[in-house]
Image (cartoon, rainbow, N blue to C red):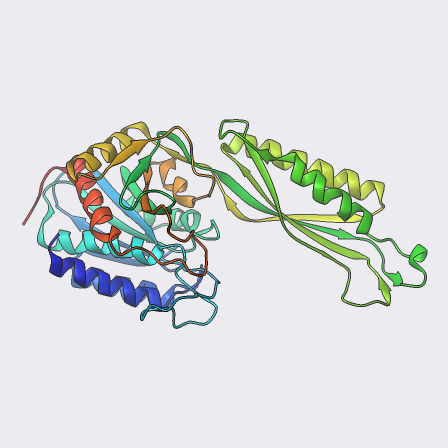
Length: 384
């Protein structure tokens, strides 16, 4: 990749960084991406997929497999703390997970394909909405138009602070944990603070459930039995001294390596809630949000990425351990051979979702190069 192209893509990344949009609200980002893809001469540009999703198809017109590269459109509801000239211009929102960089790399693939098109099969560039909530990939695949572009292979990446800059980490099988947010509502009866005996307070049940749920999943080795429960929020009653509480909420994140273990963990957590509520005479309501199924890498797709790293001189290490954080990319693996790799953002780089995080621009040519090499692995050399 020439210095001119790298500079142009870096500038594009900085523009995307300044205008983050939250999950399900990526209207302007999607419009900007779709316009660029049309400029790059994609044979087909689909918009509005599963919300604000975009797809670009570069079709050779010849028989062959379809290979897709996927990235994410959404930012986060976090105020960026940064002194860079291209910091977020949207109060309370920031590209603090690196999706701006991921988009830029896939747009770099599109620019290359505009000059060197596939000679067989198709390349499909997927720009997915709402990854941060776990809803985007499901909605994208459920869109009736997805059947027109359903790929045989899908590749994706996520940058990873804590891993050496530009180094690739990759594993076969379980790649990202399943997770879900469990929202527990406990309902009793309020009373005057001078007569708490006339009400039904959820305080005792809440105080019992918090340590019980935390102990239910204590982490440990990332194997098939791994389970981690994290209490993220709790509230009781109102901000007043005159009312004994009748309402409480408890939010807990459940995390496992496999979907089967997740179902078991859900049943165990719900049993604890039911038991505490019955003991203290409370009503309960349990709902789930941010539901991510486990992401599993296909063996053949992993081999393609290993070869792609070798051909681009990107250091690659295979690991047996999945990442604890979740990804909805696994949805694309339900009907295609898929694999995600992790691209090091630097050992001392601020963590994902931190207010001082910023995607390292040095990764743009690395990720773009690996994606193009993967396309060549599947379709053969690209030409005019």
